[in-house]
Amino acid sequence: MPKPTADAPRIRLLSTVTDTQQRDLAAVLADCVEGGASVSFMQPLTEERAHAFWRHVADGVARGERALLVAEDAEGIVGTVQLVLAQPENQPHRAEVSKMLVHRRARRKGIGALLMQAAEEVAREHGKTLLVLDTSGAEAERLYARMG
Image 1 (cartoon, rainbow, N blue to C red):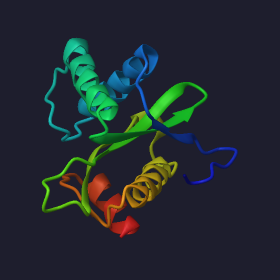
Image 2: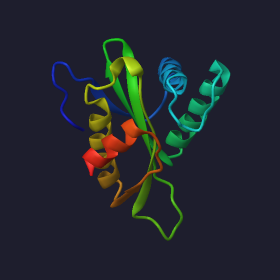
Image 3: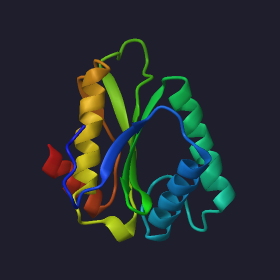
């Protein structure tokens, strides 16, 4: 994982998702949707729908189908990204980058780049040599272009 600096958040790979982490992840998702992010949800995003989404993700993590990374600061989770590791049998080298989210209060601090670097490292550890993603939005496109 990338090394945090004094001002940078800590990046962690979660093997399970606690109720507190689920609540924090739901808050990040809700903030991103409220901010207009195109991340498969429309406004208004209910708390129930956000929690249901993260329960689904947690189940995938438990089955080893997904890797879930979070960025945490002193206030809790401020960002996240997933790698969908389970791919068709003819694509064992591939993973999908999914739901790169950074809370608006924590943007422009390099968190997206730290999460992407960590995701690339986790992908390599799982033998994945090709990452694919589907994105829209100028901020996301700039980040992914900068990251190569």
